[in-house]
Length: 469
Image (cartoon, rainbow, N blue to C red):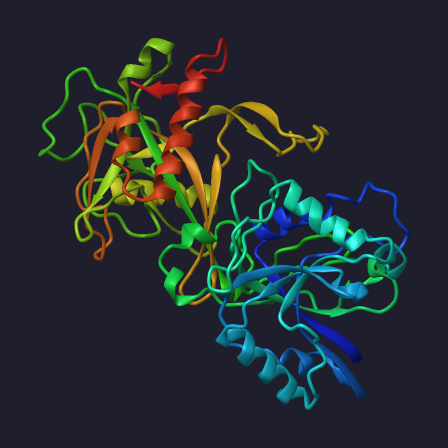
């Protein structure tokens, strides 16, 4: 049965990075002598509305007070002030922009109540009891912020105020507001709770297309459940099947052939051609039959001296001019590893297979308890990294990246493997050169991690990566 409420609050939440920095500022005098009511732990927030209704409303109705189309927005710090109330002991005054003003009006109009949010909008830094305040604790907290140089010296109403967690930290002039929480604040601060998880705000249009900036905020269309506000929160991400896409890609390695073939010729190298489930690849394969699995030549273990011969296959995108890596969506009923092999082959034209390599993993060995900490798996073929991207429609895309090797070190590219809408020109280049050629930050970080893993594996005594000859 759905819960109903008569008394609740809407909290506007800063980004997680800003919240973490603010919490350090909030606790600078927590170890000093004070009464039990002073310096409780709570999440930094802007109280958008404090609602008291005569009749209870179901949570689904309360949720509708926040417009579904509401985007994330920036809040600007205006000043740091000392107040005369417990819940405004020391606080950051927030500049009242149009978004904050409109949200404030919409919530109260929708619920049919009058605003009861003194000093709106503000973000409390500490709660200090009247007993301690009478002894000057609120002023001492503010003075210590100044003494530690955690507040900028020069502030005007136009410039606002800047804060930082330490003299070595970056200054904060405000924050991106990414979430709104519905909370119930009854009794001691430590017992306050979030009653509806999170209302995640849509990405602002100015940041669309720059999804790597949102890797630290994978919260859109997600539900995060918080048990209490006392620092013992349990965080969960959940996406329904119609709001996420699974994809896989590969970083394809080989050792530079001693006799480079003519790049303009296609087909297979001397000997047996690459096969797909037993079928010879001599033309564009069907979408369901593109996973080369049979090595066509013996392989040898690498040596540190092989690093100078290590090459990576990168793709030049004909339409955009970018250098990228092969990847694509997982087909229905296809494993992620199969998807990575298929996509790498389709977009590069080189038959390939997973490259076993030493790497850290949290996956346990079958039938053994290996603990929760990462351990080294000497011949892992698991994904070496995962990329989470938020799409334009608000859905999530998870890309699982695998290390790959060609099934024959001297194999030539097979023609006609790309899909009709693809325009990639593959090129094997020196591993470190491949990192520098990447034009997008997300691809650059993926390929750098892959090269580091393989080169590090080459220096080990045992289980060095092996390549097909």
